[in-house]
Length: 54
Image 1 (tube, rainbow, N blue to C red):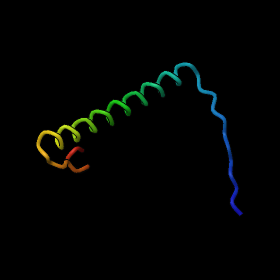
Image 2: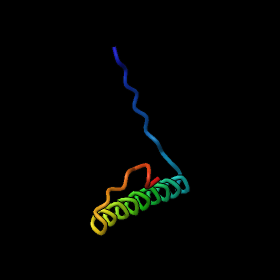
Image 3: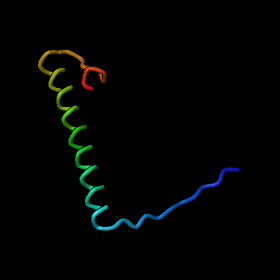
Image 4: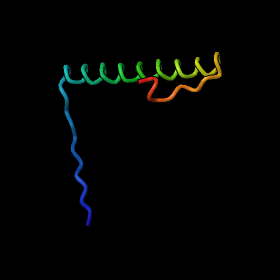
């Protein structure tokens, strides 16, 4: 039998700010990487692998 536990988090204002900043940085990094790969494909017809973007 599987059991599931749910926890509710109540972060402080400073923790919320840090979590939002972290998510913003992750979103920015993802979007920049996606734009790089898209531009490489459109301009050069070259596929850029995940390894190359890292």
